[in-house]
Image (tube, rainbow, N blue to C red):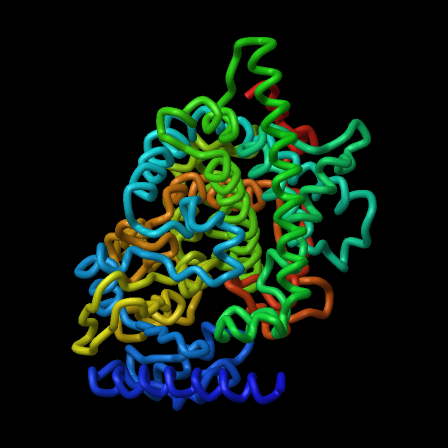
Length: 514
């Protein structure tokens, strides 16, 4: 009986999918690989999705269709088409396609990242632009950034001079990941989560567990497939749903405790700080934020600000250790502007144009979210002469655009000088370079990210010479991406740091009560 019922439901679903496909064929949607009933192209997509889509763009053209289950996803792969999506049809494509899992994590779109375009999004976006990421608050939080970056430098110095064989080098991801974790958690929650022995405390361990939990990440292939299959298949994935529900309970418990601590401190002292949790508690009523919205926004800041920073910096250092010429030129600029008698600060960055070009070149070649986050059509639109129906998802392949020989000379070469020859904006007005998106959905924390990446790169290059481990050649470095929505290096890069400044300049610049 159960098998008979499943067969009937399956047949009905196939009829519905078939009707949708025939309708889309009549309306001239973009071409693409042939899709199967129910699963669409899910089994055709290779693990590193951005490379798979870039390969398909060579076959089907700069705009193509791919079916995730029965859901149409249109992928654009050129700067001209990106402009059509992000400017010409910006408002119509400013919605989000939330899978069931994302819907739960985002509290039904009550956050910023996954909310649909409408009154809630406009209100929360205004909060982020005018309050959380205002230049005044970014400047006020600068001591935290410099504290964590110099703490990382101190840790590398200690390890490379005392603890580890010099010729093997250090795994940069370990240091960059810890710096990014401590930085974003201090900005968001106002706590460093480090005990008196320099170890992560119990609350910090709980936070790391939440962040590293596989349910929050891209998950297994099984759970990934479940996101795009029809609702009647959900019984096949009950374990994943239960794990996600338990995970959300942990998030709530952890965040509620942090907020209670801040509320108690505010009641006792009457003071507020610049941390995001304090700002949201202060502005909650003014911006009509529910409790769920506050929690969702706090975790938006954590998820958007941690992995992306560490990813960008690891790729940058991989490119730099493979290019001694770029490293030498950046260090000559640092020595000329900063000298070797003091530590670099963020105030030096405007006077370090080549360092800024290095940051920009890394974000060009290795955007941390290479397909952006998916846009959703709120009405029928035309892109590149093709029909994109209401409800379809549109993805912008910024990775492919940044490697397009039609708009970049020698696009695969890591050459920061290209941005000295032509000043290309990377905050959404030049569609050849879109590491932070564009239009209504552009990342509100772009300037904070640029400051942190530039400052970290500056410190690493000012304090150390970087070389490959003994016996390793540039061509041995694995420059393939790891599967996922954000693209870590598949193999963590290892490099050998050699101190180049006086020993007393490797101390952490502690920031208290920021």
